[in-house]
Image (cartoon, rainbow, N blue to C red; front, side, top):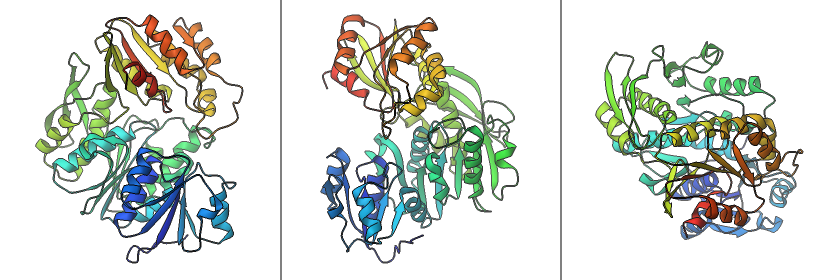
Length: 459
């Protein structure tokens, strides 16, 4: 594998430079003195920001963008061998690295690289950890999977030994990482277009845990079934968090305010108790906060700093994000795109003031929709009324015979009122006619479904 020489900055080209992770890595290398360029399908906020920092961005993937002066090409799982730039790089024998391989090499240059993994909750927990490190004055480098208000985006370049990033299991990308502290929030079925089954996914997380060095630490959810399969024989320290007293860090006396925001007593491994109060709603955020607090404690950050930081965290964009109100209808947007995430979000919404709970859901990828069709339907019944948009295909082209109409039938069969419309305009018109004062409307999914709420609000 090609090794980048960080002491001798070279020319790096990113295929798909506008992605939220790729744009952050490009900016990180540009800040380190590398000559950075890349391409994407269309202009975006990310590409415009990069251009403002002197990065050359081409719009459209073309073979002629790849020239001999480029020392290395970076690409993601979304890039296939028939991509003209990918093909040109190989034809010119220019070294190529995946996004995960580049991330791993970057992490090697920090004394305390932290990788936060799990099927759900990565962005929120990474954001909470970021808040803790910022409040502790550690000057960390942070790479978050969403826009975090505290840093005005998804990247903060610090000058200390701390580096924090999300660690995604898709295509085994995180197995290229070099963490000293690893977090595993949960392990469930997802990305079934890549993994064979749950056993395959668990094997991947086990390999991730084995990356941690002797002086490292794994912080892991005690509720993961057959936990010992993941943790037995690890060289590093193992710390657990979870709802039960068997976990090293666990909650007690959980209560919620009128907006479903929890407060609780965190009980630590030394028997000490610490009061935590969150500004983000839902029981799932209690668990995210436990993981973040355990990590902060492991880094010897004072509890008063951890408590203050977690209380100041006010969510990442598209994570139960309050968008506004129109005609007395509250509009929330959420990134949930897996049945477990949907259930967590809708359970949270159930504690939020409302007359009728509407969920406007956009399924994400045909593979995931087919694999979890009945699970999606069951989770969606936690809403009073459901409206479905067409499936957001992302990188996929084969429909696999699945559709939002098929999902509508499944939801309807479970007794929940459900509608399907093929266009956003039709959905907006339906909502305008049917939502009334004091209703709660959640747009949900990992595609572009947030545009519906923004349009209703006139944004």
